[in-house]
Length: 165
Image 1 (cartoon, one colour):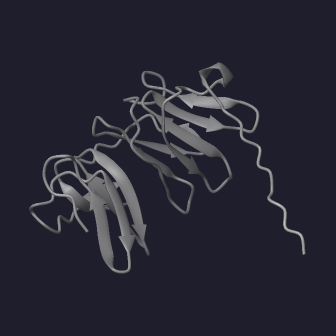
Image 2: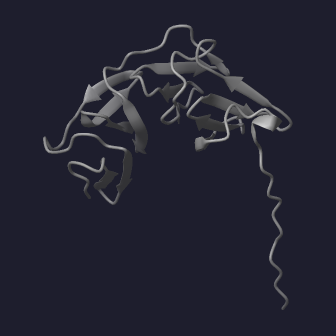
């Protein structure tokens, strides 16, 4: 039996191709198959042949996007680094941004719940666009990354203070 490695096409996209910024913070694939890239300067949706960009001053209240959460109905939540949150329906940003009361750095889905890692507030619950603080340990301050595995949260905090598992 002969086994061959599959060749993958690697393509680099830049602002010259329409990407909102070259420094990409993260990727997200929505239920409808679109690829989203969130950056320090806005959000880009790749449409297979071009980018649609969402930027501060036009679509977003703030340009620095921390993460993306998509609900089963297609609603997308985008926590911004100024503490506000953009909400999208059908690829359009709502004119009113939410103010959850904290800077949300990351979403973490666990069964039917959504947990968030936040600046200054540790770990909380996110439900229907609202933040429900559920700090598990008063020593946990800011949470930058959050993973749930086998009944445990694993998180990364800032260089000062606690990080833990």
